Length: 521
Image (cartoon, rainbow, N blue to C red):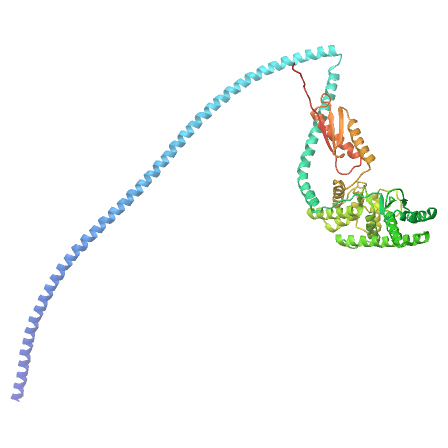
């Protein structure tokens, strides 16, 4: 027991001694750690102070640089603002000076206006005073003139009105002429282009036809065989064909004369067959002429069909096709009618295409416009009206019928195709070399032109030139003024249009001149 207690006490005493020793060692260790920590904290504080000073210096430098930069920017902004303010001030000063100068000018102009107004008022008062004086003088002069002339003021006024009417009429005609010329110049630009383009695209050679045909023979011995015993063969041939056969002294030639080209062609072909065959007697002549006439009829129909096909026209009546074929053996003023009609049809087609109209109808009307010139029987109607009747009879459209009947102004035009047919007909017939006129009728037309011009007052001389396509009128300068000359040209053109028939156009040129001649000796 005591041992246990001793052991326990020893253990407790050892534990207390160990605890005391541990506490002592711990205290020494803690003081050394504390001392080290204090030293480290001093070192850290020292380093922190050094680093803080360096950072402080760096930040101060950065702040100074930023301040300098901001200051420079601020100064730049202030300079630009000052510059703008200076510019605004300058503009304001300029405007002020401009306004002041304009104001001074306006004041000056106002002063001048007031001055002129006052001058005008003074002049107006003087003019009114003079007007009153003139009115008084006018009354006195009128009274004197009435006494001298033996006319009242009303009668003199009437005479003055009549003279002014004549003058106004002349001025009005001049104005009308100017208006017409201006309208023509504006309208003819496009028309000329279309017409010239159309003419250029259709070019045909023209051959003038005669009323006689020459039948060439190899020898004069054939003439006797053609004449026959006591002239029986030639009489039979003339009776069968209706053609006058002239056998004269012309070597190796027989002349066939007839106004009907179909008969003349039948006679020529029949005579050719008879001479080639050698059997020439009245019975044979009648047989050959009958066969030749039948052949010509077939050729006429074939020509009509070929013409219609070439132009692209469809649905024509067979009688109209036959009529078109007969045009081959018909001429107008020496111009072959079929060639003329084909040319007119082509011109009408081109012009209708340029104007945006129906090309097929235009071609149809152009081809049929002269069918009235190849009648089977004699008729008193003009060829245009006769052709229109035929077209209506054989079921042609109203536009085509109107174009046929109106192409020589026998009836009123009711469709846009009608004037095209008229123009193209004139183009085809008026070209140089297209037609031939008898000399007597040609000379008479020139005389008629000159006679119409001589029928007007103040005309000294008149000359038809350019084959009757231009009329030069020379007037007396003392009787005809410049305004009257223009009026005279217009009146002559209107009279020619109403009283004469002619191909193409006639240009009327009125010439008025004044000459002063002196001789130095």
